[in-house]
Image (cartoon, rainbow, N blue to C red; front, side, top):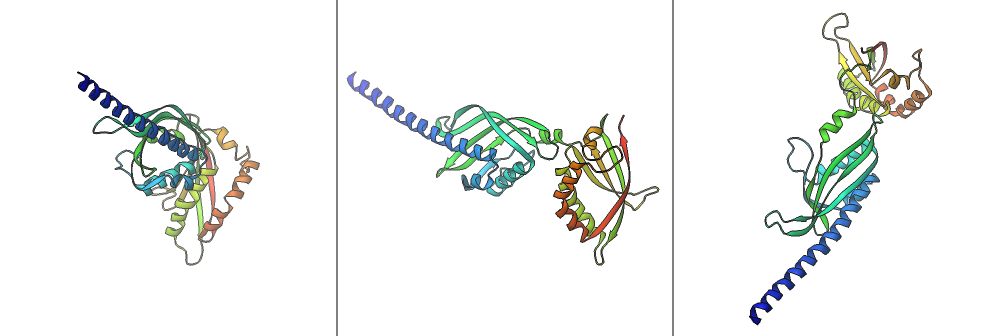
Length: 277
């Protein structure tokens, strides 16, 4: 009996030591994960990259996407920090992670919580329920992932369709190309530089480049602006269509972008604003 008692005590001792080791590792890794998320709040991407293992595998919250690697995670971090301001993570609770094969705690960590932020392009406030898991190798984040409804959040942020109360501005463009420049160059710059920067500065607006394929303006280039409301448009243009002070400030920030386009060609437009009923 004494022999069996000693064996049981030995097993319990070993289990206790192992359990304490996992607990210490979990607490250490949780502090690393907290520091990593704090850097995201501060929009310090380069410092975040120091926490990432070069051979990491990461679950990305994008429909149909395979596990991401280091460069995928870096691109996602840069994208979030470009798209959103005032990012803040509030944890509901941190939990120990477990080995997927044995179910035994392995020192990894995971967290349920909520990210809040301000969408830079529209000024809209966001609140996103999330789950993150972190596994470590050599003190760096090696495996895990993010789980949240990225698509649903992005779809809710910018006006992609016309609703009652929306305002649509339809512009017919007159384009004058510089010598040696092509319309393809003009269109590519407009799509890849002008529109993304305009949408970032004109909060609550969606901009599209369009081309007439039938009717009076067949072959002409146009631009369609969609604002969430007349009030959103009025932040930038007064009742006579003249630029407001805010618009003038925006145009100063867009100066470099506009100058880049002017090297390819210039444009003027005739427009009509339509209010949706």
